[in-house]
Length: 104
Image (cartoon, rainbow, N blue to C red):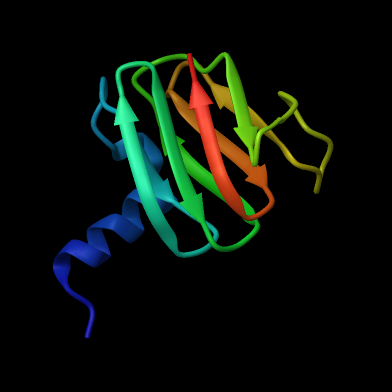
């Protein structure tokens, strides 16, 4: 049975612009998330599956890494990398499984 809280999180994953401003949130992950850490200038998390994740950030990212490898901004379709929409503060990261780190 789905709870109201789970339903709300699913909506935020599909409509990330509804997430609170000035806060960082991992809204949607490709796999099961094992750990998330937030600070004023970074977000890091570990996921057990490759895919595309959606976050709303309280900062503009300067670097995105996965498994220690720096991912390119504006990746080619289907390639590992990231895009950031400054007006909505939405970050989409396409990556392999493992630890992702987003820093200012």
